[in-house]
Length: 197
Image 1 (cartoon, rainbow, N blue to C red):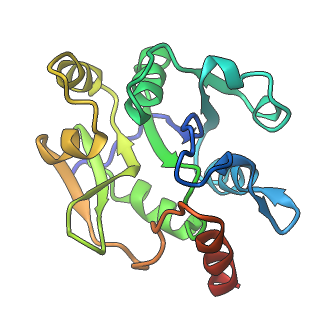
Image 2 (cartoon, rainbow, N blue to C red):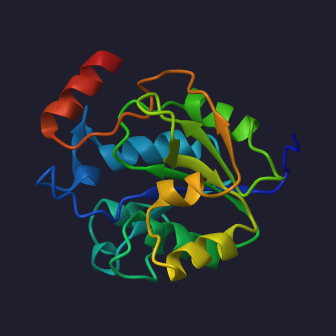
Image 3 (tube, rainbow, N blue to C red):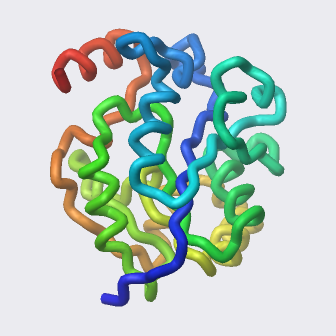
């Protein structure tokens, strides 16, 4: 294993349209702060710089505008639009990519991931506690992986999980099997926050 000493930047993906939730997941209230602010706080503790990934039409909203932003340069590509935009903007750093809808993620989860990233692989990720496949939305996209991601996109593969499955990805077992559970409904958020308390 080769642990890289490159800078590590954080990217919190908040550009989704939250169709299943029916309301913007990033703006959900979590004990007086937004879910986005919660995730940004966790990520910021672990990285050199942190950014919110946004669509162009979200740039001025009251919550996202509180943070440094990387605006999607690509349309209708899902999460990979934000990832590729960040890789384009800062290609010489390792990127910690985290979705904003992970209510149970902790600094310990992220610090362990970063401590075990392998500079010889393009990606480092946890395995899913449900199916053993890579969890792409709490993962490290290493400097130098831009061409790999772009080739998949050019070939019509926009799913970050498929990209990691089909690439050399260092996989780690999760410390907490619930840490990367995402939320798609208000009930799921409330239950997650209550269980984490």
